[in-house]
Image (tube, rainbow, N blue to C red; front, side, top):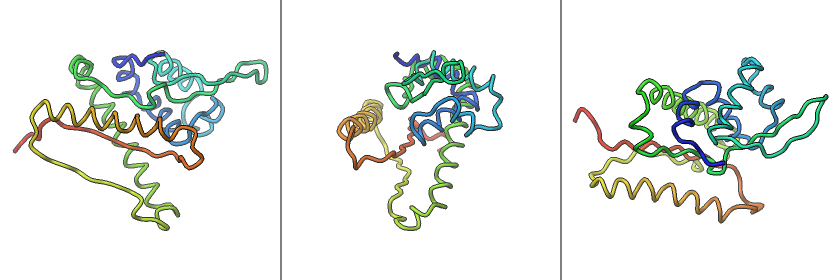
Length: 184
Protein backbone atom coordinates (compact mmCIF):
# COMPACT_ATOMS: atom_id res chain seq x y z
CA UNK A 1 0.00 0.00 0.00
CA UNK A 2 1.36 3.41 -0.96
CA UNK A 3 1.54 6.20 1.58
CA UNK A 4 -1.25 8.76 1.32
CA UNK A 5 0.88 11.74 2.34
CA UNK A 6 -1.99 14.07 3.28
CA UNK A 7 -3.66 11.37 5.41
CA UNK A 8 -0.28 10.44 6.94
CA UNK A 9 0.36 14.03 7.96
CA UNK A 10 -3.08 14.30 9.57
CA UNK A 11 -2.76 11.04 11.52
CA UNK A 12 0.81 11.79 12.67
CA UNK A 13 -0.47 14.98 14.29
CA UNK A 14 -2.14 12.68 16.83
CA UNK A 15 0.08 11.97 19.85
CA UNK A 16 -0.98 8.32 20.12
CA UNK A 17 -0.44 7.62 16.43
CA UNK A 18 2.99 9.22 16.56
CA UNK A 19 3.91 7.17 19.65
CA UNK A 20 2.89 3.97 17.81
CA UNK A 21 5.15 4.88 14.89
CA UNK A 22 8.00 5.76 17.28
CA UNK A 23 7.61 2.38 19.01
CA UNK A 24 7.75 0.50 15.70
CA UNK A 25 10.67 2.60 14.48
CA UNK A 26 12.61 1.89 17.67
CA UNK A 27 11.81 -1.81 18.05
CA UNK A 28 10.72 -3.09 14.65
CA UNK A 29 7.53 -5.08 13.97
CA UNK A 30 5.25 -5.48 17.00
CA UNK A 31 1.98 -7.23 17.73
CA UNK A 32 -1.00 -5.28 18.95
CA UNK A 33 -0.49 -6.89 22.34
CA UNK A 34 3.15 -5.73 22.47
CA UNK A 35 2.14 -2.21 21.40
CA UNK A 36 -0.55 -2.17 24.09
CA UNK A 37 2.05 -3.20 26.68
CA UNK A 38 4.48 -0.52 25.55
CA UNK A 39 1.78 2.18 25.51
CA UNK A 40 0.04 1.25 28.77
CA UNK A 41 -1.56 4.68 29.21
CA UNK A 42 -3.38 4.43 25.86
CA UNK A 43 -6.91 3.03 25.91
CA UNK A 44 -7.30 -0.12 23.80
CA UNK A 45 -10.01 1.49 21.66
CA UNK A 46 -7.74 4.47 20.94
CA UNK A 47 -4.82 2.17 20.06
CA UNK A 48 -6.94 0.19 17.57
CA UNK A 49 -8.44 3.37 16.08
CA UNK A 50 -4.99 4.91 15.49
CA UNK A 51 -3.58 1.64 14.10
CA UNK A 52 -6.45 1.58 11.58
CA UNK A 53 -5.82 5.21 10.58
CA UNK A 54 -2.07 4.63 10.24
CA UNK A 55 -2.68 1.51 8.14
CA UNK A 56 -5.21 3.31 5.91
CA UNK A 57 -2.73 6.17 5.36
CA UNK A 58 -0.02 3.66 4.39
CA UNK A 59 2.24 4.60 7.29
CA UNK A 60 1.95 1.07 8.73
CA UNK A 61 1.45 -2.33 7.19
CA UNK A 62 0.28 -5.65 8.60
CA UNK A 63 3.14 -8.11 8.21
CA UNK A 64 1.59 -11.10 9.99
CA UNK A 65 -1.72 -12.34 11.36
CA UNK A 66 -2.47 -15.24 13.67
CA UNK A 67 -5.38 -16.56 15.68
CA UNK A 68 -5.06 -15.75 19.37
CA UNK A 69 -7.78 -16.32 21.96
CA UNK A 70 -10.50 -16.50 19.30
CA UNK A 71 -9.45 -13.27 17.59
CA UNK A 72 -6.94 -12.28 14.95
CA UNK A 73 -3.78 -10.71 16.30
CA UNK A 74 -1.88 -8.58 13.81
CA UNK A 75 1.79 -7.71 13.71
CA UNK A 76 2.46 -4.20 12.44
CA UNK A 77 5.57 -2.70 10.84
CA UNK A 78 6.37 0.62 9.26
CA UNK A 79 5.08 0.96 5.71
CA UNK A 80 7.14 0.27 2.62
CA UNK A 81 9.06 3.54 2.85
CA UNK A 82 10.04 3.16 6.52
CA UNK A 83 9.62 6.90 6.78
CA UNK A 84 7.32 9.50 5.42
CA UNK A 85 8.67 12.40 3.45
CA UNK A 86 6.14 15.10 2.76
CA UNK A 87 6.22 17.04 -0.48
CA UNK A 88 5.70 20.79 -0.75
CA UNK A 89 2.17 20.43 -2.15
CA UNK A 90 1.02 18.26 0.78
CA UNK A 91 2.58 20.63 3.31
CA UNK A 92 1.09 23.72 1.66
CA UNK A 93 -2.41 22.25 1.75
CA UNK A 94 -2.22 21.17 5.40
CA UNK A 95 -3.58 23.40 8.17
CA UNK A 96 -0.87 25.07 10.27
CA UNK A 97 -2.30 23.50 13.45
CA UNK A 98 -1.81 20.00 12.00
CA UNK A 99 1.73 20.80 10.86
CA UNK A 100 2.58 22.25 14.27
CA UNK A 101 1.31 19.11 16.04
CA UNK A 102 3.16 16.77 13.70
CA UNK A 103 6.46 18.67 14.08
CA UNK A 104 5.98 18.86 17.86
CA UNK A 105 5.54 15.07 17.95
CA UNK A 106 8.65 14.59 15.81
CA UNK A 107 10.76 16.86 18.02
CA UNK A 108 9.46 15.25 21.22
CA UNK A 109 10.41 11.82 19.88
CA UNK A 110 13.82 13.12 18.81
CA UNK A 111 14.53 14.54 22.28
CA UNK A 112 13.33 11.35 23.97
CA UNK A 113 15.49 9.16 21.72
CA UNK A 114 18.60 11.32 22.16
CA UNK A 115 18.13 11.46 25.94
CA UNK A 116 17.67 7.69 26.16
CA UNK A 117 20.73 7.07 24.01
CA UNK A 118 23.09 9.41 25.85
CA UNK A 119 22.00 7.82 29.14
CA UNK A 120 22.65 4.30 27.79
CA UNK A 121 25.56 1.93 28.35
CA UNK A 122 26.14 1.88 24.58
CA UNK A 123 26.81 5.62 24.57
CA UNK A 124 29.19 5.33 27.55
CA UNK A 125 31.15 2.67 25.62
CA UNK A 126 31.23 4.59 22.32
CA UNK A 127 30.31 8.27 22.78
CA UNK A 128 31.53 9.09 19.28
CA UNK A 129 28.81 6.85 17.79
CA UNK A 130 26.23 9.66 17.84
CA UNK A 131 26.30 12.28 15.13
CA UNK A 132 24.60 15.64 15.46
CA UNK A 133 24.85 18.84 13.58
CA UNK A 134 23.10 21.89 12.30
CA UNK A 135 24.16 23.28 8.97
CA UNK A 136 23.30 26.69 7.57
CA UNK A 137 24.43 27.68 4.11
CA UNK A 138 23.34 29.84 1.22
CA UNK A 139 21.75 27.69 -1.50
CA UNK A 140 19.59 28.32 -4.51
CA UNK A 141 16.08 26.83 -4.42
CA UNK A 142 17.22 24.16 -6.87
CA UNK A 143 20.30 23.18 -4.82
CA UNK A 144 18.19 23.13 -1.64
CA UNK A 145 15.70 20.73 -3.27
CA UNK A 146 18.52 18.53 -4.65
CA UNK A 147 20.25 18.36 -1.25
CA UNK A 148 17.06 17.30 0.53
CA UNK A 149 16.22 14.71 -2.13
CA UNK A 150 19.81 13.43 -2.18
CA UNK A 151 19.78 12.84 1.57
CA UNK A 152 16.59 10.78 1.27
CA UNK A 153 17.91 8.78 -1.71
CA UNK A 154 21.19 8.07 0.10
CA UNK A 155 19.35 6.61 3.10
CA UNK A 156 17.04 4.46 0.94
CA UNK A 157 20.06 3.17 -1.00
CA UNK A 158 21.98 2.35 2.21
CA UNK A 159 18.91 0.55 3.59
CA UNK A 160 18.70 -1.63 0.47
CA UNK A 161 22.43 -2.45 0.56
CA UNK A 162 22.22 -3.44 4.24
CA UNK A 163 19.04 -5.51 3.94
CA UNK A 164 19.59 -9.01 5.26
CA UNK A 165 23.09 -8.32 6.58
CA UNK A 166 23.88 -9.81 9.99
CA UNK A 167 25.85 -6.64 10.71
CA UNK A 168 22.87 -4.33 10.17
CA UNK A 169 21.44 -2.72 13.31
CA UNK A 170 18.52 -0.31 13.65
CA UNK A 171 19.67 3.27 13.22
CA UNK A 172 17.58 6.42 13.28
CA UNK A 173 17.95 9.56 11.19
CA UNK A 174 15.89 12.67 11.86
CA UNK A 175 15.80 15.41 9.27
CA UNK A 176 14.08 18.75 9.12
CA UNK A 177 15.17 21.11 6.38
CA UNK A 178 14.08 24.71 6.65
CA UNK A 179 14.19 26.59 3.34
CA UNK A 180 14.88 29.94 4.96
CA UNK A 181 15.94 31.28 8.33
CA UNK A 182 13.41 33.91 9.38
CA UNK A 183 14.26 36.95 11.47
CA UNK A 184 17.72 37.57 10.03
